Image (tube, rainbow, N blue to C red; front, side, top):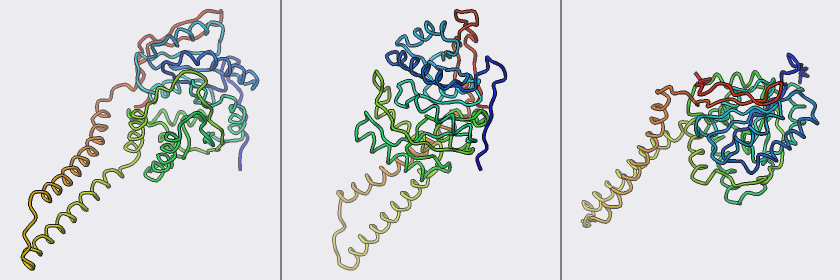
Length: 340
């Protein structure tokens, strides 16, 4: 049975809804992003804040937001000291949000902020997580849509956490779900998997993903492949088991082939094949060995990076509007390690 969640802010300045928006070199789309979010949230009528996280942008996007923040008391800008990657930037934004419900949104507006009223409604009905599942993906090539379709289903089958198919970072999470997420200690963070690992009562909404409002995607296919490998190796040991299986099959094939050659020579007097078959066998076994070493190295590398215990990200500063106008800058070069 759903319980209706009645939420009141602690004071008139305390936001109920926090929007977390990590970005990297998205200057072209930021004006429309700020405008659409302001329109949607004012119509919603909830006290809110928007936490933009600048992940080391070099196109002046942060300067634009600083200029706008003087007139927008709900806007906060968290600037990282350099580019740490989207997963770290997203964690930084969640750590700096103050609302009782946090909505994760991309700056490119492919995930429409107009979905927010229905998300908040489901949260008030008792869901700790409102998961946004893509019904369609406008503006993307068939190859990207097909590869994403296959990847999400493969990851779901391999992962110990039940990672939902056709979902990205776009979702609403309650304060208790976010607090639980921030307690997770790994530095190599695959957020979609961590969201699923935390669990909590979940509602699912389907939506149509839009084309980018402006600019170009910063993700190329190599980057997406790397993210896919990160997801698989972060939440499954299946590749290691595949390596064992490949080794067993190679040993059986090699042993069977050797017995076949010996039998032919002893029974039929056939000449043992020479260098071509030997070269093919060595190449086959060498390829399996290198593949296995690479898979093991991926897991060992993760262990090595985790053992260093470096901060997940470093904050350059936090910029927000003052009550009397203007902006204030806080926390220069503060190190944040919310993941312990």
